[in-house]
Each structure stands twice: as structure tokens, then as C-alpha cells.
Image (cartoon, rainbow, N blue to C red; front, top):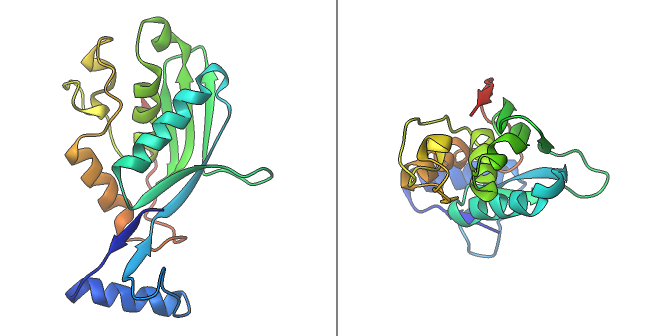
Amino acid sequence: MHVRRLTGGLGAAALTVALTLTGGHAAAAGDHALAARVLTYDASGAAEFRSAVDRGAAIWNESVDAVELRPVAAGQRANIRVLADNGWPRALPTTLGNGTVYIGRQAVGQGYDTVRISSHELGHILGLPDRKPGPCSSLMSGSSAGTACTNPYPNAAERAEVEDNFGGALAGTAPAAHAAVIVD
């Protein structure tokens, strides 16, 4: 699990608020930390892209501390639904951290990398917009980086934006809503 360490000043004030809201329970004895906001995803409808979706989620987990993507438990409702279809990849966020991702076979058929597509579309659910045109080093440049680009990792600015989107929220709290349809 990723945790964010808080020290002094505003960090100490946030810890006080966190401890008050959680009944005084800290993550570990002596540890001044807030847990990452956990978002669950359901990739059961991702068909042949299931492993690419799992890898895309793992990349985000490796890249940021404020949010963690986990497969949904049986019988639970997921924050993120991932589906395969014959169209172009797209994300339909409903609120920050919630929505539907489509891994479209059209882009895969044109030669785009499935793990990059998955990471990119999950980035939209995490609040990132497209940044086109853009270089391969920018995950959110999407298809404008070309089919030779297989980089599935967010750059420093993209990581910082997701940290900002989720970093101020205590685990389990609802962040500000974002309503957008993002088609790549």
C-alpha cells in the first residue's frame, strides 16, 4: 500500500483532521501517513485486453502514491468498468475516479500498444485530459505519439497532476466531481 508522509505545518494539521475523522487510528504506530484512495476496477469485460488493463493499473500504482487501483472483489461494485469493443479507445468519466473505459480494437488493429492504451484511458478516469499533439514521453499524448510509441508510463507532470487530484482527499472521501467525455 502507498502512503503519503506528512511532516509539520499543514501536514500536521491534516494528520490531526485525519485522526479525528478516523477515530484516532493511524496507519501504523508513530507513522504520520494518510492511506491512498483505493479505486476498484472491473476488467471482466475487457476480453483479450485483461492483462493489458491489469498492467496499466499496476503502472499507475507504481507511479503515484495518492491513489491505488485494485481489481474489484467478487460481488462488489467497481469504481471503474473496463470493456473491450470494436471502436476507438475512450474513457467516459462520471466523477473523478469513476467511469467506464473502452479498450477499442480499432486502435489495436492500427498498431497501437494495448498497455499504453490502458494506462492512457485509466489516466482519464484519474482526471487527466488529452495533451495532443505530444511526444511519446507524455502518456496523455495518446495516439498523436504514433504507433511506434509503446511508453505506458505517465511523465512527472502527469504524475503530479494525479497526486494533486487525489492527494488532498482522505481515503474514502469523495473528491470534486469532473464530468467529461474523453474520446481519443
